[in-house]
Length: 149
Image (cartoon, helix red, strand yellow):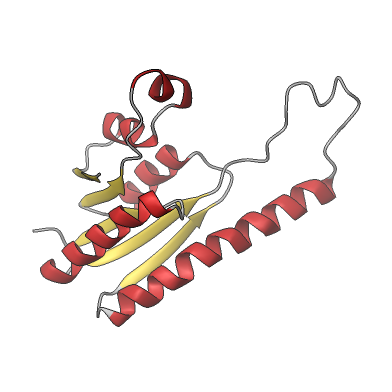
């Protein structure tokens, strides 16, 4: 049925429900998985330059190094868990990207036939103000998406 499942995570406890479900599904179906996390671009507040602060190359390098270490800390244990379950897995860190865009593009490029992700369950005004990466993935992909709550 599904031969290659993309599982997304941001490392949160809520996202872990999606990871667990995706790995269980992959195990049951004998599917390969690709586990993805994305880290956002360097945050530069609009008022920073007006206040006289300008990011230096060292600031960008330090941020990138910390994001890489953060992603490795999320992905390495998940790859080990997948391997322990006998699931063939790859991990991908997409730096300087918004999660929904990274998920949709990676799923297409990797030839995934299912995306599994958790919904953080925001409703009403919080969802409008904060946006929803899950809703954005659902809107922008033709690949089936399994949303775990």
